[in-house]
Figure (cartoon, rainbow over the protein chains, first blue to last red):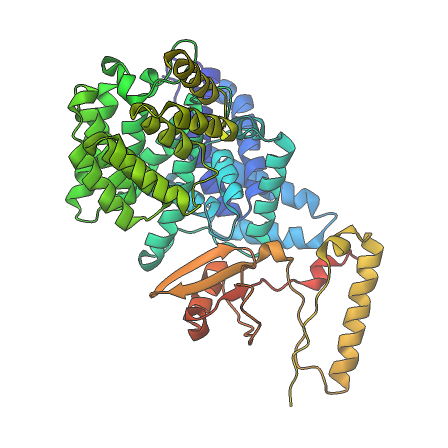
Length: 420
Length: 122
């Protein structure tokens, strides 16, 4: 026991909870084989720390102490419940015999592996996508169900039910607590990266609601991205973190103080976060150096091309169109085509872009997507086709569910009415 | 000649049943299975976890994909079955991916339920 720390045990425990509780939880889930039991054990371990550390001093290896205390408390709990259910008694006895971790044995490498196991279990493809997101935010990031519900504009009971169902499925279908073997990693990592990026986009560009950005969710996604890069530096993990950092570098410039949207071309580039840009660009270079450039790295490269332009007019649109060509091949989707069309409009003029957007809309694929109509409206406006532009802005307005976006479109409509 | 008998039921209705009715159904099922085994007709009977425990496995271009839910295409019909023993779901998915038909159609993986666990203690 050491008594030398300047901070009191209570502050150390608070700090430790913030920094370590998810790590400790990840290991307890492996040792106990059950999410709920592990969560109870985590709470028990910290409760015991609050009681004992001020009296006995802070242990030399607090993390290991918390893990072994949590494990003993869980076995204790099972024994008490075993009075009502004999099967729990057997389970308690089995846990007691197996893998009893001596605090000195818990090395950092195992703990990091446990965090990855937790990520891959929460993002298991057998769980529905909304459950993957809820489980990741709850178990890996430690958000409360209320916080998750708030971020995704759903009720807390809905989120709680998703989590309960997911845990029941993990138990019933016996989803193992493991990092997939090498030959399965690519497919499984795709799911994890998609969950992380979904959390990010929900934070950076929410589909609905009052604000343009929810910084806390974007931060959480970047933290997850860093964790993945640290533990599993695969090219697409690097690409995703680069993409998130480069997009997030523009966060402060994306909205006015009143919460209104500012388009990329109109943003004050001096407010872009240069540190994020430098970090994102360096990660992108690492991803490209691997020789395997996937969809996330390509999107990061597009974001980096914008970040490298000192002014909107100096943007290298030819390079951006080229990158969209590659992206459309690597990950074909009508949204990628739409973004490419906008880039073409910037390089070759609005008429060229408009023809491409109208071709996409004629196929009926993006007819319900407000940004397709907003992009079309903008090109019509630039071509002087005011009546058509107005109709397209109105269509976009009908489809958007996001307040700042609505205000932006309304402003454009007013400007058009005033101008002619 | 062997025949496969497939049981279909409305899960919502099953979930709404009070426990004593569930227990009665389980007891009746076990008794019926015993009778059929005694008469030499029953080869194997298993109950399945509910459908939200399903995973659908496909192999396309040599790449295995597993998605949540029973997502057979409406153009696909049940064409066979395997009951396999696997350590966990990941191993079951791996085995499903080795089934040649996974390259043409899809393989729905459903965990088998332990009826003894579902029945309340006597």
